[in-house]
Amino acid sequence: MRKKAVALRDRGTGMLFKRPKSPYWHCQFYAHGLPVRMSTKETDDKRAEKFLRKKIGEVLADVFKDPRRLRYEEMRKAYMADYVTNERKSLRTGKDGKVYLDKVNRLDGFFRNWLASEINTDALQAYIADQKKKGLSPGTINRSLAALKHMFHLAKDAEKLTRIPKFDMLAESAPRKGVFEREDYAALYQVLPAHLKLPVAIGWYTGARLGEILGLTWEFVDDDHGYTDLKKGIIHLLKTKNGDPRDLPIIGPLGLLLKAREAQRKDFAFVCFRLNERDERERIQSFRKAWNHACCQAGLGQMHPVLDAEGEMQYQKLRGPRSKRKPKLMYTGRIFHDLRRSAICNMLECGISQVQAMRFSGHETASVFKRYASIFNQRSMQAAAQKLENFHNQPLGATSVLPVPEIADEDLPVN
Image 1 (cartoon, rainbow, N blue to C red):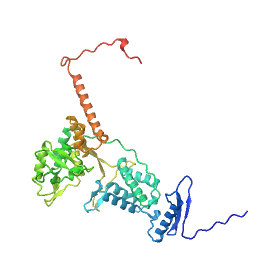
Image 2: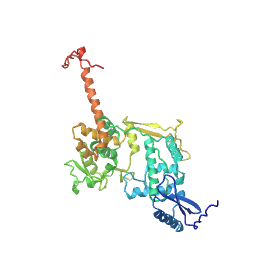
Image 3: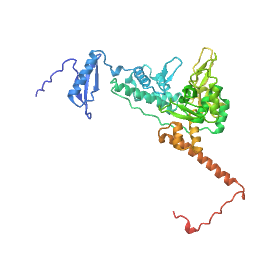
Image 4: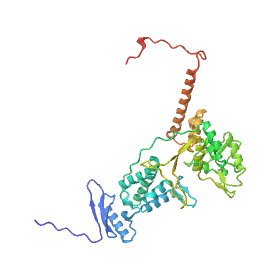
């Protein structure tokens, strides 16, 4: 029996078809001599036909973006533009004036010049292995993977991609619970450079975030502008992480530090500044190395050599032909955010209510604040245990001890 003849399609019109287990129509057309297949995301054949004609029109107008030609650099550009447009607070500005993100810079070193179609599960596993070899923690690796995943979603929303690879995140360690005791803070304060004493003191006494402290300007502190009266001990902090303004208390020596710094500012806008080699005032952008060095001096941190997966020591890049190889070092110890945890614990310990402590700290929900409260509870248990130990270590007769009542056998619990 002869097969029925099938009418041929007109050249350049593409085709629609359905795939098993998919409710959507799929289309196929040619771009730059290569076949392209994608889902129309339409269940109606008329709408699917309209989608197909739109894509063919993009090809004829030479504006169609072939997913197989999309590169990592283009996805990165869209990702950074999204951050700039939405004014994300995690953006950093380099000395050259360009914005950057550490989590994206780590991706650049591995995926530069890659096609988006080449970034699959195997490529992601290779990236994870490469970052582990460099001594990076699972949390740091996950931040970069999350950024790359966001790049793919932005590309898909812009109809530049039809596929997103599967991202398997690494298991991270429990949230940090480091705190400063009063003795720890005193030891650190003694070894800090002069220009860092004020920002560290603000973090210790108020629990403000590092970005909020470094972005603080005198217009929010100088009472001549009607914002803050140092005599009343309040700083009106307007530039916060969540955008909600809040008040910070000026406690103890903090007021004297602010007044001393104000006398040296000479109309400089930012509260936290340092003097450069030309005796000019500069805003403090970051002080990670100085912080690590001071913590090591105070016995609150250590520098460890970085080892690869095989246990071999890693070395820094040579700066010149005569420079000597120096091992890479990694810091472990107290971080600046531990001051924030310490300030909140101190607030709770002195009897401030959780509601008022949340107003000082800027926490919007109690769920996040509970992490800090759990640290305070642990400190309270340790203090209670120490009191109990001191009680039992007292000699007989030093305190009144109630006699232990005798328990009859019939009063014992039955298993």
